[in-house]
Picture 1: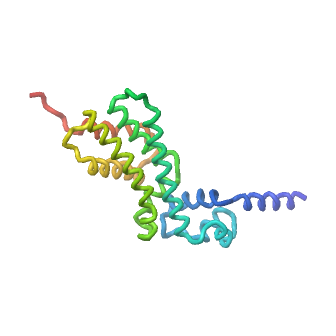
Picture 2: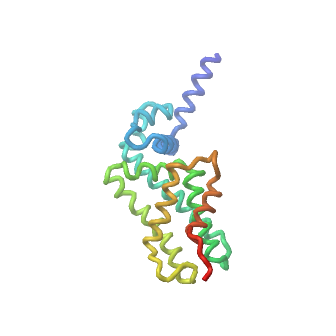
Picture 3: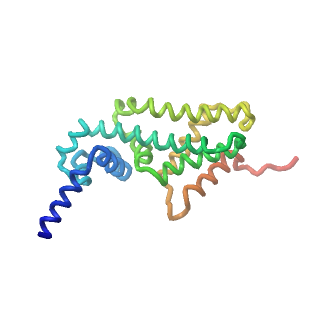
Length: 209
């Protein structure tokens, strides 16, 4: 009886792995192992299902990858947008920029396998998959461009700042933390404060003249 019950529980857990469950597992594997090392069979094994069962939800590995990439951008985009929206309308520009940086790092390092997987494997996937992800990526970049342009307009940023280059530097630098960040040696929130201080105040000691 106990054995039959265990079998039924196991079968139930396996059948409960639907499209979202497959994506959750795939995102974790891509984050941990990269694109090339993760096969459909490996995803199926981690999900506790037969490899053929994946085809009920996805036609190929790259279809899974495309879904993971899109989800990863949407998670960080929503995190950043919500962080800004939650601020008072009269919040100063420096606080707004700090909130955006903190939200990006929080989504990347603390919240989502999808966001981490996106950063880790984007350069590894076929060009056709990268091209499919570009509209979602461009929408997030446009969110940053809009924010930085507003900060430039209200005088928070210098008038000679190139918005596109600043956005590329910001997002690129924040994403690179995925390669070395160790939560045992500090929090994402503390890291965001350090990065914001550098971006906003620089690193050189200015001499009074």
